[in-house]
Amino acid sequence: MARSQQPNIVLIMADQLAPHFTGAYGHPVVKTPHMDALAARGVRFDAAYCNSPLCAPSRFSFMSGQLVTRIAAYDNASEFTSAVPTFAHYLRGLGYRTCLSGKMHFVGPDQLHGFEERITTDVYPSDFAWTPDWEQADERIDKWYHNMDSVREAGVAATTFQLEYDEEVGFFARRKLMQYASENVGPFALVASFIHPHDPYVARPEWWNLYNAGDIDMPATDAGAVPMDAFSSRLMDGIEASTVAVTDDQVRNARHAYYANISYFDSKIGEIVRTIEEIGHLDNTIFIITADHGDMLGERGLWYKMNFFEHSARVPLIMAGPGIANGAVNSACSLIDLLPTMIDMALGDDEDSRPELGQPIDGRSLWAMARGGDEDDGEAIGEYCAEMTASPVFMIRRGDFKYIHCDDDPPQLYNLANDPAELVNLAEDPAHETLAARYALEVAERWNSAAIKTDVIAKQHQRRAVFAAMQNGARTDWDFNPPRDASQEYVRNHMDWTVQAARTRFPPLQD
Image 1 (cartoon, rainbow, N blue to C red):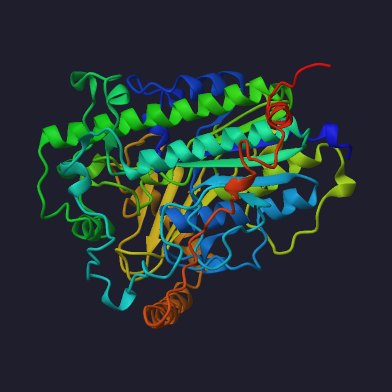
Image 2 (image 1 turned 45 degrees about the horizontal axis):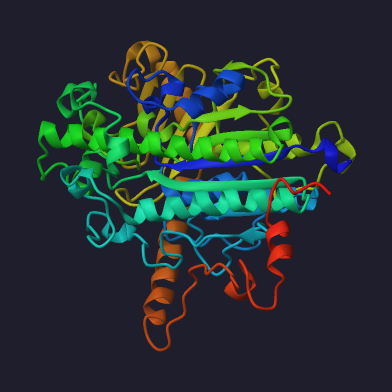
């Protein structure tokens, strides 16, 4: 395919952003003008899910197009192995320059996974420190487990490590785009992955002051409004919500800061879109806006993620650019669908160039629906194999229904069309007995839960042994250090400053 026919792809990812809390998805208070603008000229997927409601597993599925149990991406300390092909590998094979700016929570010595360049470090550990222990599933690891401090300490600050990180991510992403333009590079696929609005819920004053405290809506469903299911009870204990009380003011402050940080993330979308416009690539660039998972933000008394209720498991998914229709898609989909979708974006009509997949993928392409085709009545599959449980948790979202299964807990079945807040568990309802039985049979056919549990525990033992050994002797870190040679930047004594000024100026001066 001729290079000019391939669109650039710019994927902008938030961390822990539930679509419910965005103007683009209809929230009456939260301001997301740049997300709104992309949705207004593109397509919004209204039933998009993560495949595991935790950072690293979700991102490994997103990168590979595979479910976490297929690649043993169980938790935030699972290694993402180099032999797993990613969308960055496939796009690179199709002639794209591939670049990552920001967080992807890669664990292991491979910190690129197909990206030709990575221009920032990551924000979280790349080793096995955060390995859970399913043989002591009720034991908290206070050093890194979530607790209620993020809620109780929410508020305003001049800076945080997250603000520092996202400023770096945005700057280096924009600089790379300018470099691509000045060097006439194309096509390119750039991922800019920010950590906001992930807790801690702390915002800079200019974003906090966008909102009046009286306008911040409180959780629609509190802990006492719905019977506590077994998994939620363990999650409440794990994050200490069952033992550490928070006041209404603290809850409101946390939501206030979360909304502020969504607007901050939205501003980064605006900066990147403006840069694409400045370099003259707006008409041949496809934007994809998404997140790795959501945030309960106090709904049902729960916070953060780690469950398959809507606020935790759903993600925003907006696409805009050449060839993309304007509208909304109701068919269920998930992050594993983005790998085949981006391949189709890159191929256009050139089927002869379709790459051979190095491994089977679990996703399907959303490209036809994004271009205005008929909806495909698809599904979203979720798997959770991390903390607060001692057995795998599975989700099937199809049509109006969502089914959640864990060997240790009673099943859950919700009709999201009639009950979007998931207040009524239909799994034991006689009127839904046949449907619940079908889902139970499907779970048994899809997954060998006992075998998965055995593998999870074996992998945990394996990683803990490696981590313990690596704490002795000379320290070896896998944390990514972006290669940078300051002696070749800006103006140095071996450079002609006029040449350097012309080289880095865009648009260039005309002869």
